[in-house]
Each structure stands twice: as structure tokens, then as C-alpha cells.
Length: 242
Ligand code: SF4
Ligand code: SF4
Image (tube, rainbow, N blue to C red; front, side, top):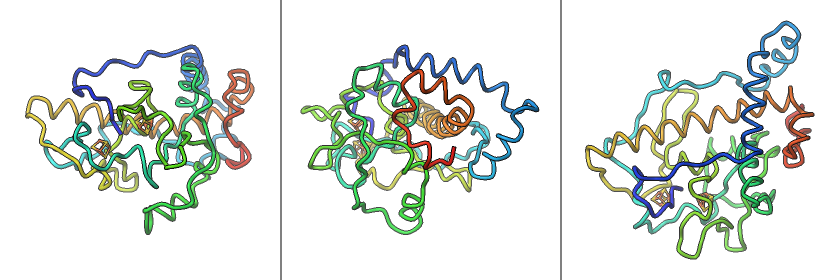
């Protein structure tokens, strides 16, 4: 959902605020202690329910059509609105919204209707993450509450991780990054520009997935710290069984 209205290669950088910085610091502090003897029982228990392996770029195959990039400026089928425009938030996204003073955009009412079918639909319905983590607030028309009247992202470049990676998506089982079918307005990028798009979006896919792993570990091992940051108030811990 990169509705930036800006040429992608010139996009500005996101600047971290205090809650996000504290979350990152907490991860740096806790990560080296995952596999210390004291934490082995916790990690084994977590591993039975969640994948805790962090993704790395070199393990993934990128299977996107060569040169194909989203043409957001001319999009006729905006992905920030509609039954599938549901943005799941990670702790990092919640931290960013708090830093931006936009925590009022955190919501829980996932729409009952979606055009997703088959495996994708079943996985979504069964996902503990969907039950445990909030989404971005949508208005009565199913449009993201952060979309501006000019059809731009109101918090770009500090948008949620899943917006940053779209339309790239991850097939975890096969280790493949693919171009989501939902994004139909595409263009062929200039050969000098295309690799930059690919690098940025692939990096965003990896970041989005790894944020999920990080959340599980921190929610299991650093509840007090997350509570002190105000982040725990936005997660249904019992749904994760933590
Ligand atoms: S559907 Fe694709 S082209 Fe349209 S706004 Fe979303 S990412 Fe951009
Ligand atoms: S935060 Fe909302 S407006 Fe911004 S890209 Fe995501 S869905 Fe679109």
C-alpha cells in the first residue's frame, strides 16, 4: 500500500520516536539471552507453537515479474480501502502510532467479509495473531482511517510494516517472495530503478516477518517492560497463550 505520491527511490526515511526506540533497545537487550540455560524451557514451549526462526534475505527466492512495480499514482483499485484492506499491527507499529500521537487509530473490529478464499482465508481465520493483535482503524466504508483526502498515506514513511512491504508477500513454506495478486495497477520500472524497488520491498517483507517473531519472544520474556512502555495494553496476550 505504498501510497506515497512520491517517486519511490527518493522516499524519505522513517525517524524513530521514543517508544519505538525503547522497543528496539529491549530487543537488543533480550535477544542474546534467548538460549541461555534459564530460558530454554520458555523457548522450547514457544517453539512448539510458533516459528521463532528469523528470516534472512539469502534464504529467500524472489519470484516477482521482472521490472514490475506498483503504479500507486494511477491506481484504480486502491488497497487502502475495501474488504481486504485490513492492516494487522505489530508491536513496532503500535509503538510508532503511539510516538506519532495516533494511538486512537488502533482498533479491533476485523471485518467479517473478505474476498480471501481457500487456504489464505482459512489461515487468516485460524491465526492466533489475528486474534491477539489489533488492526488499523477503518471507517464505515472500509477505508483505512489514515488515508488522506488526497488518497495518500497520512503517516508515510512511518506506515505499518505490512503496508511497507505491499504488494510483495511471503510464501513462508516455500521460502518465496511473490507479487500479490491484489495489486493490479502495475508499471514496468526503468531498469536503473527496478532493483531499488525490489531491494526495498524484499527488505520490508523480511522486516515484517521478523517483527512477528520478535513480538512473540518479547511478549513471552519481557512482559513487565512492555507493560511499562504502554504496549501490552494493545495486545490480547491470552489469545497467544503467553
Ligand atoms: S493496489 Fe498496488 S498500485 Fe494500487 S495503491 Fe496498492 S500497492 Fe499501489
Ligand atoms: S497506513 Fe493506511 S493509508 Fe497508509 S498505506 Fe497503510 S492502509 Fe494505506
